[in-house]
Length: 257
Picture 1 (cartoon, helix red, strand yellow):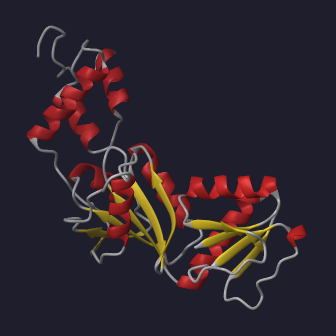
Picture 2 (cartoon, helix red, strand yellow):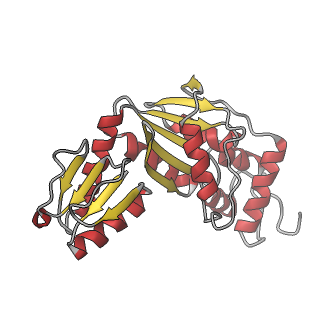
């Protein structure tokens, strides 16, 4: 856990905003107050004149202008102290992503599928020993993520039972996906380099139906383009544009279902 301990109003708000953007676990205290047992890093301003040298925590001093850099330094200290960074991914249309170091969740994300791989890459960029664990539940989307991480250690995890039941007040957008990603990060999987998945007829048809919705009902992409979308070779929007421009010749006429 990261602790923000400062009387600097601007730093307080900048650091809290940066920590929330990163999905990091944190709390706030008055400078010099006793730290909670779970504290592992403290962020304060230089003029706060507090010291936690006698505490087993990393102490980062920064300013409001450099708050994001200070947060990154604090998160980096957590990772160095706890060992290997493991990134869990719960695949889907908007994957949940959790960055775990030891027993600490240091960052969490809920992003569109197109942003999943760049997000994971950013989290492991400075971690040569990082491991990415991807849930196997969504065949096509998990395959797209696994295959795009060809230079990263990846495990495919049986994600059965990883999505928790959310109680009252906990049903925020993406929370279940993020918590599933945390569980996936903590489960051993099978080391893989690629995942070969051939789209089923049902999956092809689903994408064709989605293309018709995406085009406003004007057209439906053909089987070849739908297969390329399923495999992540083209986006649905690009496939619709290609079909509209002439495409692969397999599209259905406007008046057909």
